[in-house]
Image 1: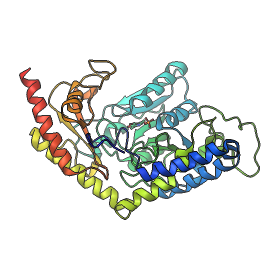
Image 2: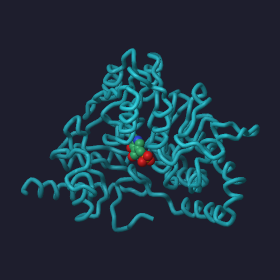
Image 3: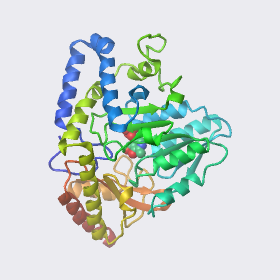
Image 4: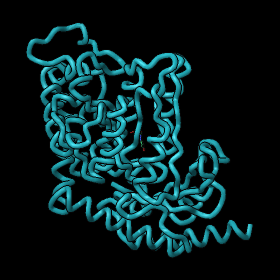
Length: 391
Ligand SMILES: Cc1ncc(COP(=O)(O)O)c(C=O)c1O
């Protein structure tokens, strides 16, 4: 449904949901609205289980360990609130983590006396070893929980989550992987990574309807694990269904039809290039080629080695990276983003990595994008940066 007048290069923030998927969701909505009580009491659980099966086959985990949430922001908050960290305990994150997750950790820390430690991960990056060393160097005897993005939001780096998880668990640290961007962008194998928690959005790269995310909890942590808000069914004992699933299936009245459409989205996306692997390979190739076009236009070198990219890439842009919030509250973060949208019709994020003092631009490559769009962006960018220099 994307506006044909917009060159849309930000699938990473808010992806496009394909029309056949929205049509499927519409059918589930009709089902809900025709007989709402039957839908919520009799039909919804089965639809959630179908979604579980579809997710478990994409990311290789047991379906019973999957709880649903409307987005990663809320799934991460559930883990933090139930982490049990107290006075003197440390949670380890880094300067590439998503701001909502860091803010929730900070609020929890203020209330409990736990401490949030932020590793500095260099950007531009020489590679995975540098990321691994930067994070592991901040582990102490007090570290209880680590939050690590599978693919970072501002810098689009694929972190070595398997290696990090193994090393952190060996030091007695529980690991929460924020995979908001990972499924559908890179192959995800939770069974191989073996984290304590893995959460991801379905409304980003799997292109499911908005408001769909999941949280997988390792078997040793599943007992007693609960969502932030408890369901009206929380006090019921169900001989036919485990408590973990019951609590996460229904957290109050809401539109759960996005979850009902998850199998439809998975089938549709996999059909585009014949398989998920083929789609991910196509999008990776396009992101790499798009980054090359931008680096050539800017006269810069790629900021991270190609194997650390999925279907997004971040380039360093000349100029000062503005602190989050930008100069004009309520508008886009950086005025350059505003000019690219308003003068050239390109929707692409321009933001910053404050710890490195850098101004960054991130491109996404999804099935509907083409190389000509990055070439057009490169031209627009050169024009706007020249205008900035002469202003
Ligand atoms: C790494 C990362 N974590 C979490 C989120 C939050 O996702 P949501 O807005 O769906 O909660 C994002 C969103 O872009 C993200 O990039």
